[in-house]
Amino acid sequence: MRAVVATGTPYFSPKAQAALEAAYPRDAVDPLLVYNSLAMSLLEQTDKAFRVEDYISADTLATVRSIRNSDFRDLAQRVSARSPPAISA
Image 1 (spheres, rainbow, N blue to C red):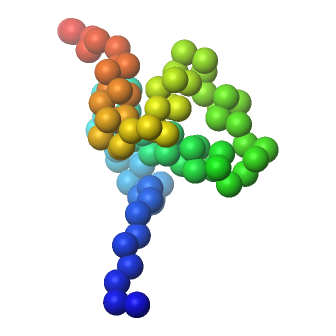
Image 2: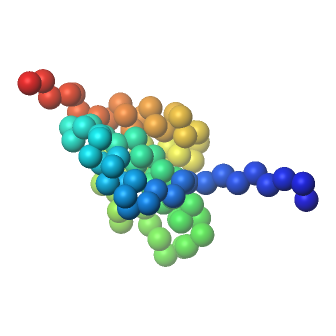
């Protein structure tokens, strides 16, 4: 073996997560939710008892399920499109 291509969701330390949360607007959908969608999709494939429907509301289920037929960039755009309009001061 000469090389390994490792793909998957990145690990964010608790400190990094706190920094991201502090820097991200509270009135927008966090694009990192796409990683959660990917993780739940993978978990559903490996654990037959896990059901995405138990963790995702019905109105967002179709967006989460779209990870099956799209790539990360496409799903990130779909998630961002669900963001509420920015609150103007």
